[in-house]
Image (tube, rainbow, N blue to C red; front, side, top):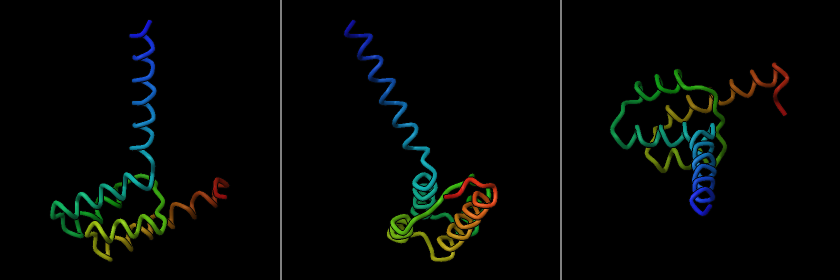
Length: 96
């Protein structure tokens, strides 16, 4: 019985972790920071932004991107895509 409960708790914890890792803004932000720290060029990073799914950035994300060494050009590109994603959701009736 203890093993069953432990298994259930482990599965629940993994599920929460997967949802947290796939949260739209933070995963894109963290990926860009990792790319910048590994020496990716702005061009490579912008290509990644173009290929990325939907995400949304807030002020804290921008601060973390800048602190992580992401260039202004890449941050601006991310903000443009974030804004475009919000506009698309609003037109589709999914916005706030």
